[in-house]
Length: 82
View (cartoon, rainbow, N blue to C red):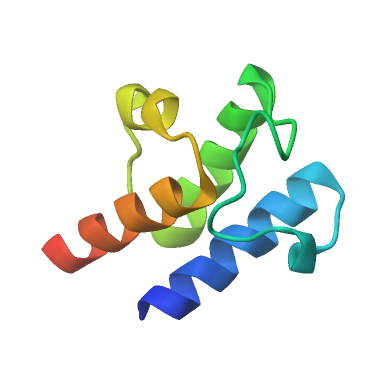
């Protein structure tokens, strides 16, 4: 899976969870400040990302992610390692 494909999938999942248009989400979007992701929402998003990409996202990585790019970069690095 390419970086743009991972990015598109992450945006789709976030848009679905946050009930907004995926086009309003970009790599620089901050999860809390711009998108309004709360702790419950981050758990829901993480669960869906884990299922979609068939990976495990450690809690530490989840809490360290501040932007959409942080999430995409993390998933890309995990997928490259496999």
